[in-house]
Length: 356
Image 1: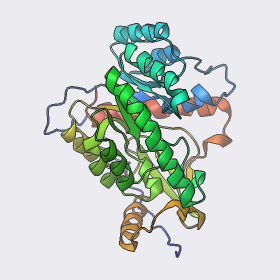
Image 2 (image 1 turned 180 degrees about the horizontal axis):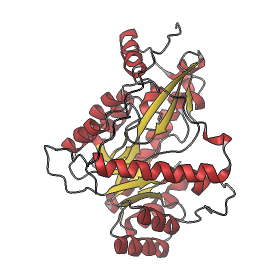
Image 3 (image 1 turned 180 degrees about the vertical axis):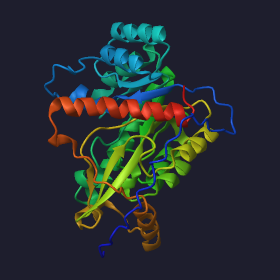
């Protein structure tokens, strides 16, 4: 494949400011307007173990719930790993007092020996008030994790096996399992798996930006996966060219190149009651090395016309400014930036997207 240069954007996009909120008009009646936040939006403070007296690390979910509520978010989507029923009841009590919604996050069962752990955590999530639990098949990124097609196919087989174990559990307990498009499945691959199960209890955590890393148009991803979506990771994205491909980064809502308003409308058309959670991950830009041979190891041949169309669309959205390298900053600055990013996106969601 020949390397292609990206065309720089003029820099005017994302700079428009207004004095009054714009409330989008939706063609469907929407019952859920609270704007939630996913745990990964606080990845630095929750998991990076940065040393800071100003922003001490969150040590449990109850601390995070207090913080997110005080920041103005209307719901949370947190991991239930290791929870027992007593802790889940504490979470439920506090979430109800704060008038938040709660969604869980969980690891799929690896095999039969892991099924007891999975069942206990689904039970805890339900006890805490969750009717939807987000999960992933792959914790890493497809193009970094697998070097051969055979390795990827083995992963697919294991993923289906894990879902076969999980589906009867969530069906029995009455909790929906929402599998995220997590830089692992392209559209057709994910829909194939969903149709394989054909279960009302297995659907999608629709991430609005992840599949850019797999060279798919984010709007096409939303259009294809919206009918299966149980919950949403709402994010905006920015890109920047580098020698092996492009850099990809989450960016504050309204500052990237995604048509967030249109995406929300499409998703709500299929599920007016769906909940949206901000996933604004404050981190260094990810490398998408699509100009290297290794990147293509797990992909069947992508038609040239499809690839050309994708590159044409995203090159128009290239950031006019260099993407932020977070890791070079002191801990306090990283943690302050994380809070600022989440607050800025919440403000945009309220003023421009109609969330409460």
